[in-house]
Length: 75
Image (spheres, rainbow, N blue to C red):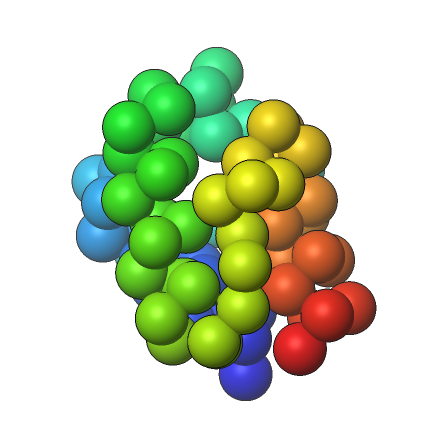
């Protein structure tokens, strides 16, 4: 469930493509062209959605899989 929500938001914010095209190995910066401001926007939305702290861990999220793994492991 979390993965679908995360992929949908990444797709919307990055304008990369459909959520099904968002793969775990994609880099936020290099592949999705998400600068730190876009990543922070994503994390703020996810913090509200999942009621968890993410912004203070932003430096750990290099790839989509890093974020998904953190959220699924903490949720």
